[in-house]
Image (cartoon, rainbow, N blue to C red; front, side, top):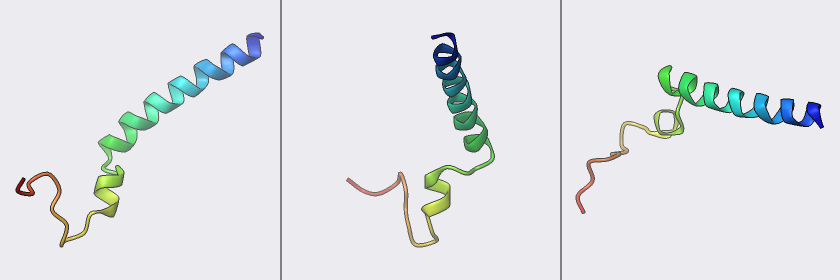
Length: 45
């Protein structure tokens, strides 16, 4: 049981760290998949 809780805690820590690190270096899916002809966020409604 102790190993399972340790694995859950490690998964949470790794997930949170990856979210912030990848976002900081510009490796989000928005940054990777958007090309020159794609407007994100400023499209008229």
